[in-house]
Structure formats: structure tokens, C-alpha cells
Amino acid sequence: MIKAYLAMENELLIAASQGDDGGSWQVQTQLAGTEPTCVAIDPADPQRVYCGTFGRGVWKSEDAGKSWKPIGNLGKSRDGGGVKSAQITSIAVSAVEHSDGKGVVYAGTEPTALYRSEDGGDNWKELSKLRELPSSSTWSFPPRPYTSHVRWITPDPLKGGRIFAAIEAGALVKSSDGGAHWEDRVRNGPFDTHTLLMHPRAPDRLYSSAGDDYNESRDGGMTWKSPSEGLPYHYLWGLAIDPKDPETMIASASPGPYEAHHARSDALSIIARKSGDGPWQQVTSGLPDPRGTVAPVLASNPEAAHTFYALTNRGLYRSQDAGENWNVLPVPWKDSYRLEHQQALAVSTL
Image (cartoon, rainbow, N blue to C red; front, side, top):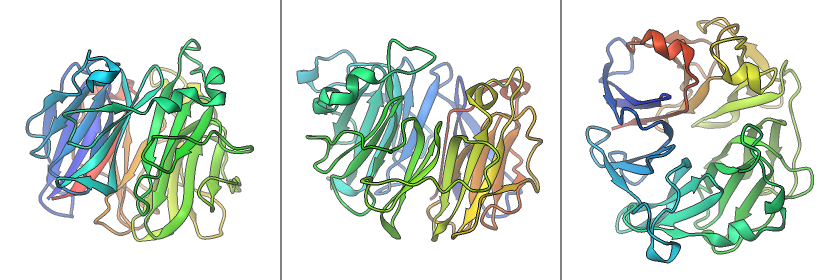
């Protein structure tokens, strides 16, 4: 069974298909009214799923989304083991750090803070050294310039304890000891990362889709380059890598943040594909018209080679040929979704 978790503006859609042909999908709605922002599946057990919300804290399902419960002990002090902010902006589960059969969970918030749980979200520890980095005084989220948040968390899929955190906006930082200590942003590193990925077949390689272009590092974030030849736009949002081929990826791009995120007027975005050393190329086969489409959220299924998913305000799309051709999946779509900017997407095979 394929499970897709679609974080819409006001609810979480859970779409399930029994086969790979995409002919029949069953959909249920969960967490209505919670403003889901991020979703993460535990690699140790795909039945265990975490969802962050903007204002209602962290939620967990242990039955692949059929039921949910709030976790995080919201309101406890930092010393009391809880997540202090209800505004969860990112969540991730390590594939190599485990405790009692559960992957170690990281949750980022607004205002910027990062938390770690080693028991499936029952207890949390703030990784407070993050907020002491020298660059922290410069972090600022443009729509709310008085604050910032942890936009993305990337645990290294090969090295336990090494994690990267993208602050929106102002820094991409890393830790080598599970968040106890942090290294600040580096010169020429991405400033406004929206999606940051690593691949188990490409040690030390980082892929960053950012407001300041597409960026890559081949040495664990020490140095960076911007291999963006062929991209017509350089405000990047979503990103996904072929699970079996670290040289093939797709990204969503727009002229700027307004066109990327405002579905009600002037939305414009594309999906571009890159393979090997070749340039980026826009893909269109089976995808909606770029005009009126907000920047898609992109994902891959770790168990499905050459398969990508794109969550847009026009529907959920899938490619099974490494991003060259696409089909819209028969997931029921409300008219209201066309006026929204979808927040997150995660896919797994049960």
C-alpha cells in the first residue's frame, strides 16, 4: 500500500492506494483546523508519522494516519522536557539514530528553536546552543521580520548525530553531536534554504533549494556551488531526489516569493529536472499550466525508484520515469484547494 500525507492549509489529507497504477485512491481528512506545516515518517516504522502544526503543536500517529494524538507537552518549561512553542515549522526523523525501536525526532519552531526527542515525542530537549550562534541576531523571516524559524531539518542518513538546520531566513547551520553544539553558516553558503536534502548513496552531498538559487555542497556543507544552468527562475521551493540515483533530481521554481505562494493572484511556477552534469530542463508533460500554479511541494518514495510526487493547488501529480512525464492522481480535490498554498508532502510504502 502507498500512503501519501498531504499537508493542506487547514487539514491533513491522507491518500492511500493499494497498487502502483494509481487507479484508485482512498482519502481521509485528519487534523482539521490545525494548520499542518510539516510531516515526517519514521524510517524505523512507517506506521509512525509525525505532523507539526502552526499553533497546535506536534501530533503523532502510530497507525499510518488513521488516528492522531498531540505530543510535546506544550507549555512545559525548557527544563521540563516540552516543546515551548506551539508553532511547529519543521520536523524530521533520523534514519540512523534510534532508541527503543524509534527514530530520534527533531522539531523546529517559530520563534527559532530546535528540539530533540529520543522516545517518540513523549519528552523533548531543547538544543539551546542553536540560538547562541553568532549569526542568530541577523535571522529574520521577511513576512514577519521580527521573528525567524527553523524552516527545514536534515539528519544525515549515514552519520548518526550529524544534522543540518535551515533558518528562514539567514543561515544554514550544522551539528555533529545531535544538536548539543553547532557550527554557524559558512561564507557563500545558501542564505534562505527552503528544502535541504541528502542521499544515502551520496555521502557528504547536500542539495539546497533556496530563495537564493539552487545550491550544492560535496563536502558536508563546508563549501558550496550553484549549478543552476538552465533554470529560468532562481527562487526555488520544493526539491526531490531519485531514491536510487543521487544524480537525478527535480525542483520547483518561481520568479519570486509572491508568484510562488499567492494562489489567488499572479501565481507562477514550474518544475525543472536535472540529471548528472547536464543543465536543468523544465518539464511540462502532464503537469498543470505554470500560470496559476503555486510552487509545488515535491517528494519521492524511498521504496520506489524513479518515482516523484508533486503536490500543487491543482492536485497531486506523480511521475514514474524520473520526472520526465507526469499524471494527475485521482485524489478528490476541493475547489478551495486551488486557492491555497500546500505546505508539505510525505510518501511511503507500507
